[in-house]
Every structure is written in structure tokens, then in C-alpha cells.
Length: 624
Image (cartoon, rainbow, N blue to C red; front, top):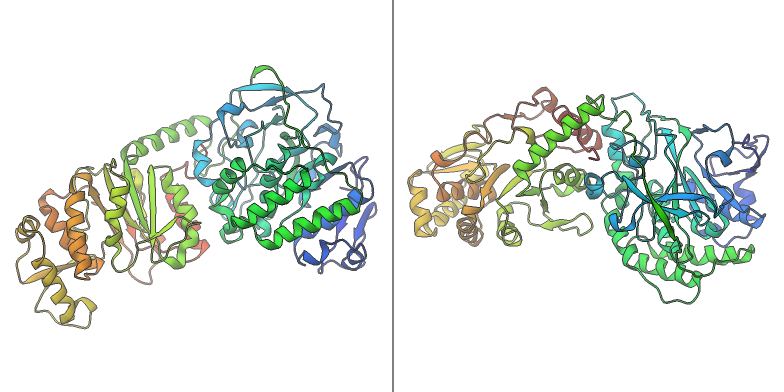
């Protein structure tokens, strides 16, 4: 970096940085030196964290910087050390920029514009990933107010943990190339995209936007900053623009984890919606900065400590002589319209090597979706594994129009409703009422690996585990033993429930089962068609009233709703059960309908499951 022509490199030390660190041409701010500046933010910044870069930002501003380039140490420059070849250094109003058409979108994926439709940046809402299509017609606007300029990077671009851990083979680095000939593109007011700290140029008019929040994980701190800044830019006439690749970033095989990004992996969409709807009547810009920062703390996107940091940051900016920009609307007069067709470069899918294959796999996905789009998926998640929910939502959200997640506790930020556990079925009637137009409801536990490409069931019939011998077992009421459901009190509950069934449903049940036997089934996966929803509600009411457990209630309900001869035997014709202690990967096959149980107790387990599924679905997690 010290070879950058016309730029002064500033290195910010931390507790693990040698006190005698020295690189000719760079200014080094040790931790001891940082305390002498008397910046208010210093006491609020944690050690062993890259957010201490905020001290360097203030130092640069204090010493006359008019542009600050935020960079990553793993990057090398493609333009021979000339940032002027990669960014708009002078902000000339005579330059014409392409700009996304505002009416077309609220969120964009800039990687598509630069030739990679299958790649998405860190900070893009997972639920929006499949819905962002390429732009072919752009507005043309004058440059001069692109105060934040985000460069693209080849090699390892700024992707999230889900992409990183499912888009490469073990031990192999990611190496992605973007279209270096694609023109820069700006975002109009009302449109957002992730902005990071890896290859980003800030002009003086946006220096206020460089503050890094401290109470969220560092893996998301810069992206939260970017969204916060984009909304505030609109009030001072500024915009964000994205530029072709200017660096090559080395993949050190140390990608972030789901846990690192859990702070907002599931909340990006909520944050964006909040920012787009936020307005302030404050009369000065810094007052609006504080107003938004307060509202973000109030709504849980960061904490009160970040609000305190914002106050200190603005005070420090004033103290070092920074003049806040004046309030003014974005005035990007549209000069015309232009067609630009983004390239389709080599995609990043294990097993997909060209654009023709991509189109073929997209067709497969559309076919699978046509079979399930009008179904509601009810996914029961073990509370201890709730951090996996964003991945399951993204995976199944491509196929099912609605995904309802239930567990033993609720979590509004993850979208988990109370309803799992020993009487999971008790929550189903409320879900049925919420989606009256659904063709049916598929239930899965989160340890069930579902090969959706083999889904061939009749959506007007019941799909059950009645032919899965490991799960569907018939027992005599006279049978004794130490198993919980053989206790006398439990068997009496079953008998009482049968007795209390509505007459019509009891008659159907008696066609299959006599008074001497009952069935136990783990009922980890099943499907209830719309035509049987009302019957199920009646049955669930009886089961809840009699405190009947899920494993005993569900097979009883199935037999009360219909005869086994009417169950769909194709839906779960090929099921593999993994005995305790055995490796699920040795039992898995893409020809199965279902494999269970395969619990994602760790992130590594989750990666193995996703990679197993990717053998059958090459476009897994892809941006279409």
C-alpha cells in the first residue's frame, strides 16, 4: 500500500502489534500514541478489534485529508498503485454515471452488474437473494456526488459466511473474477446495497460516515455502518456508487462463521426496511445523524453504547475541524437512458461449469418450486440449534412460498414462533388459519434432510411415516417396559383420547386399529393436505385437552383422518434412518426422499449437510 502514488498510508496499532512496528512510508499509530490524541471515542473502542480504525480516520481528518481510502491488508492492487484509475478521485460533474432505475428496486446486488450472478455480498438479505434479477436498462446521471465509492475485488470478494462455506471444496480457496470493463453504477435515493471497509473510497463530504459501531460483531460492523451511512447520504445530496474490480483479495481460508454474522444475518431485511422508512425533521445534519442513531438503538439494530459512540464521534469531528455537510436533497437529474447487458462470467457452483449448465439447473429449480410453491413448510427447530435458522430459511425459502419456524421458545428476530416440543401439533391450527389458501402443510424437524428434487407426492393426500419401520411401531396396550410410552398413565391417555374423538373420525380410526393396540411414531416429517385441515383441528383440540404427546398423537390423527390405503406411499418411499453413533454421510444418497436424523450441532455439520444437498441441487444458495 505504501506504493500508492499520492497517498499516505496510516496503520493503526492494537495490543498485539509490536511497539516497534515499522514500514517505510507508513505512519504508525501505536496504542500508546492513540491515547495522547484525547479523542472522545478512544475510551469507547475495544482492543483487539479492527473498529479501532476509527481513531485513524479522525487522525487523517485532523491532518488535512480530503479523501480516505479504506482498505484490507490481504488485497493487492490491480491498477498498478493508481487509485485514480479505479475511482472517481475528482468527482467531476461532467462525468456521466449509470444509475439503477429507482422504480425497479429497493435493494441491489452489485456483483450481478459486474458479471457474477451467482455471487452475493456480505450484508445482502438472504430472503432477497433469489429475487434480485439483472438490470438491463439504466438511467444516466451526472457524477459529482458519489461521496462513497465501493470498489469490487477479485479473488475472494466480500461474501458472507453462507456463501463462503458452501461455494468451495474443502481446502481450496475461492478465486472469483469480475468484469473489469463494466461501467461504474450508482444507487438512486431509495435503493441500497451492502458497503464494506475492504476497498472503499470516502470523500470529505462523507467522512462523518466512517464511524464503526462497536457492539455488533466486527464481521458485520462495517456493513451496518454502510447502510446507516447510505440513508443519511440522501439528506445531504450524496449517493453511493460501485466500481469495477481494483484489487485482488487473497483467500486465506479463514472465512467468517455463521456465529460471527449472527448479529444481523437474519436482520438485514428488517434494517433496510427500517432505514428506508425513517425520516427526520431535525434542522441540521448532525442532529439527524444523532436522531437516526438513537432510533437504531431503540429498535435493536445496535445498542445504546453505539449511540454514545456516535455522540463522541461527532464531537471529535467538530474538534478536529471537520465541517458537517449541509442538508440538501439528492438532485441527480436523469440525463437519459442506456442499455447495458451485464456479462455472465464463470459461475461459482461445485458441479456447474458454464452458463448453459446454469440455465439447466435454474430450470430444475423452477420445476421443484412448481411442486411446492403453494405448500407451507412448518420447520420445527431445536432451540439449541436456532442459529441455523437463517440457512434453513434461505434454503427452503427458494422452494416454499411460506416457511414457518417453530420451537420451544420464541425469537422474533429469527422469526421463530412458540410451538415446538412435546405437543408440537398444538400450534398447527393457528398456522393453518394464517394460510387458508395453502394447498397443504409439510412438517419437518430440523434434523431431517429432505431431498426436495425427489418430491413426487400427491398434494391432496396424507404423507406419513407409516411405511418407515424404524419410526412407525405398533404396540399392545398390555405391553410393559421402561420406555416412556409404555407407562400405564400414558396408555390411559391414549385410550381417553381415542374415546373423546369426534364420532366420524373415531369410526375411521377403528377401521384400522382395534381396542388392543396403539401406534408410536417419531413423526419427524409428514404432510397434511388442505382437505383434511378441519379434521386435524378437531383432532388437535382433543389431543391438547388430553395432554397427548406428539409421537402418540400424530399416528392416531393420521389413522382418524384417512385409511392407510389412501396415504400417499410414493412421497416417502425411500427413507434412510441413521442409527445412533453412525456417520450420516455414509447413509446419504441423492436418490432418497428423506434421511434422518442428521443434526447440525456444529457449523461443520451444517456445512456437510448443505454440501450433500448441493450434489442434487447445483444451484444451492444461488442468486437466480
